[in-house]
Length: 277
Image 1: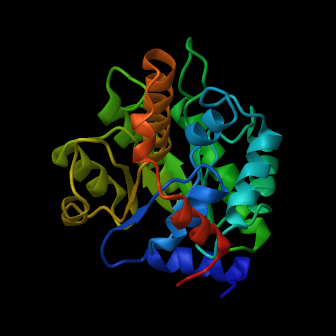
Image 2: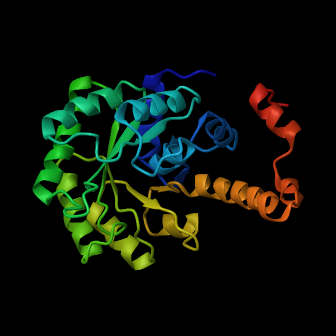
């Protein structure tokens, strides 16, 4: 079955209406995209960290051109809807962000996120008014496209160590909702109490939560009213963990025992051959 981009976008919008809570895991290449697709997830999302690590770069180190190509490649590799981790939109001004959003929509994604983190250690967050204006610019680009693309607004204040992280995130998410966001996201919230406050602030809008280990189960997130749970770069880091441990065992001890933990060759070959049997 091959879905059109419009069908993927319609499906993505539909699953956000509920009921319940779904996981939107984050692959970092075509192979991991195809494997996650085989497990029956409803949608997938890119990870800026996972993609950057695969390219030998730090998180945020990829060029805009490379990110767009990566998003398009993964979105085309599956019938599942894809949400793009679009960082801060690769744009300094509102007008530039509008044009950047147009380019993201053209990759075939069903949704994308815009965050309020600047990457500047001296001024790490856009002001609330400017950040909300940037959400408005992305919203305007989606509206002008005529496409059903979901806009996720991310407040990074908890994750990035703002001194009043949660309260600041709640204030910002309220502004982003008013600016036209479809989904609200404050990565870094961990406790049931804090997640509950985000859900309450979001009102009717669906909330995305970043799963953190150890942390709440999917059922516990659902009971709190969360609609979507993502894992960010954690799956990529888990894969790197296995690779690093095996490589270090060889380099430091001359032992190959860790290779026994690898996925079976035949199973991978079968997966990527497209053989469903």
